Each structure stands twice: as structure tokens, then as C-alpha cells.
Length: 222
Image (cartoon, rainbow, N blue to C red; front, side, top):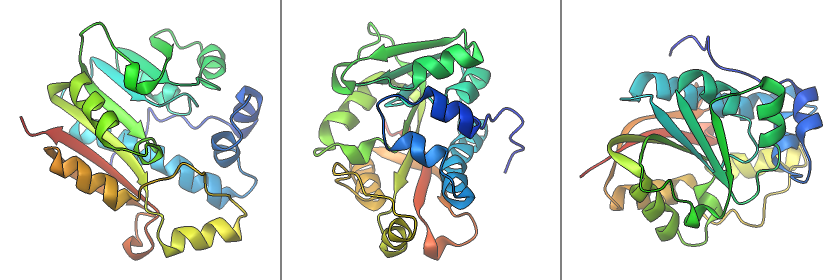
């Protein structure tokens, strides 16, 4: 594991100030219980570590469905150019403004309609996004279209296992109505579509039997 010298944890106060209409994600990143927000930030820490370990080229990056903006300060440090696309960019503009991020471009657009004028990305990050699509076909096809041949895809996915459900009840966290797939289901689909796992990490790190999230880097098998 690398030292996270470029990873940025946005203070809870800033997250709350940036939050506007999104009632789910900001609550988790600034949750009153340290354990809850710690697990959520750990997901992004691990994505960062996989970027450092497995990214081939760090010229450009797409934060696919990153409208909350939690990872943008970190991505701004790692990549020369970062595009962030989401149907609703709730907190991202405020985060960009607060940290004065000069290399971030925000696109408020339906993810399935997003286009970068024919250009492709060296890296695409889909952090807790793919499980929100009823059909996985469309978002995976869009990612394949946008990712370069030697590019790397990074995913974070909730397991939705028994331990996950138990913790929701303990901390009174309501499951979103649009969580349609488990981590295993999404990863199986990616593999069927020709993606190859480079490396996987789990949250929590040292208790795989109690894993809550799968964090994985992928390459295309073209």
C-alpha cells in the first residue's frame, strides 16, 4: 500500500456546507459516527492507492458519476486533466470552488449521453455508480466507448451482504431504492464483457469475511 500523500479528506464541515440537494452521500462522508465516515473515505483512499499502483498513464481521467465531488481534490492532484460527469452535479461545483481546482471540468448530463467529442480517457473511475443502473449493459458499453485501449477502469461496489445490511440497521442508514446489483453481480458482468481484473482490495482491509465494498482496477481485453 502506498503512502497517501496526495489523498485529500474533505473536512465534515466543508462537506455539509457544500451539500445542497443530495441527502445521502454527504451524510455518509460527514456522518457523526467516525466509523461510518471512515469506511466511506477508506473506499476512496483505496481507489487512490490503486490509481497509483495500476494506472498506466495519468494524463486524463473521467470521474463517471462523481457529482458529489468527494474525490475531485485528490484527482486534481494526480491527473493533468479531470472530467466529472453526472446527471446532477450537486456538491461538485462547491468543492471545486472551495479548493480552487483549475483542472476539473464538470458536465451535468445523463451519464449514458455523455461524450468527450470522440476523445477517450486513460482512466475512468466509477465509484459506487454502476449498481444504480437497472441494466448494466448501457453504462458498461458507455465506459468501453470512453476508455482507451490501454486505459484502466476503477470501480467501488457495495457487497450488500448480511454484514452490510446489519450495519445499515445499526447506524440507521436507509438503503437507496436504486441499488439494483451487488458487487459480485457487477463484477461478473464486467468480466463477461471482456474486462480483466488487475487488482482487488476490500473494505474493511483485514477482515475479508466481513467485506462491505469491493475496490477493483480493470483493463480491457481487446
